[in-house]
Image (cartoon, rainbow, N blue to C red; front, side):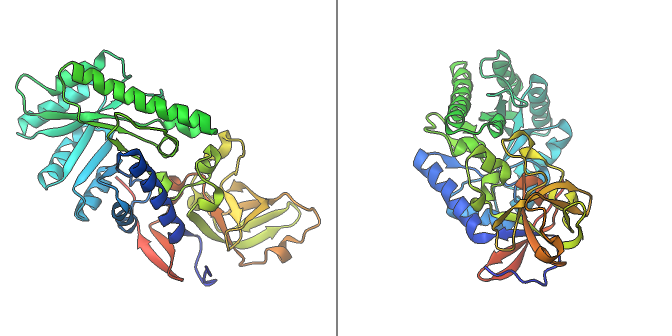
Length: 379
């Protein structure tokens, strides 16, 4: 699809058709596995995109910030999971969202957190809907499935005075799947994620605690699970765009990455073999997620205006507003002639969430035109 050469750069370019294919692919897989899909909207922070996910069959959304919850509640979405252990100072805000008609579910991972939440609900005559975070891979926070503290947390939610909180279920995220890169390893991690969360739910039920929802998910495990028996819903976010890290993991190809940064050539250093662009780390972000993978793309993968890779240009260095592309091909090339001043290039991001967070809008390739969709940042 042609891209107007007069566009001011850098800008965040979104291929709507490829994004829709990514949405449809994930939803079809969740439908085949027989589970509810609750996309994580922290990746896009964009109402236009979330509407497409819901239209494809998603039910409810996952958020990482209360600002996301506010914005999407204002769009009419009334089933929201806040998938970060909630700090006590945020409980009034969470309660307001619930009282405005949102089924707003919060997360705890400790007895202290559960007790604070239950106490808050009792004092304000409100019942918080709560899930317990389960650690199935040692990646970050949560309670191990077999830890005795699991039932202590559940008991803390069910205080003697009652009424402050209701245990809705358990949730886990196998973030360590991002470090894998074979189908076999990903399938094993998906099963570890599923079985650990299901086991935690079983322990709670055996102790007399309700546990309706068993929520698992990451983009790699969602696309690698062979079965999700015992699970009720899956969450994933970056699949909507994909990125170089996901390509390195092996769950997409570079051709399936829907997001790129359009930048312009602003100079050359022939003696050093550099092409300088106006897309530095302020456009791409500091995320160097491919450093630990088999191929390090630096600050991103360089493509021409049509999205075809330029393998001999390596995005090895960046300043705040300058991208420094290193020529690694034929030493006799005339860089100024091959990439004249003003040449537009597309850079595929290492981590779509981080790169998107650098911008306040998407420039969307849609119906043969460039349209703008707003996105938001902050907490």
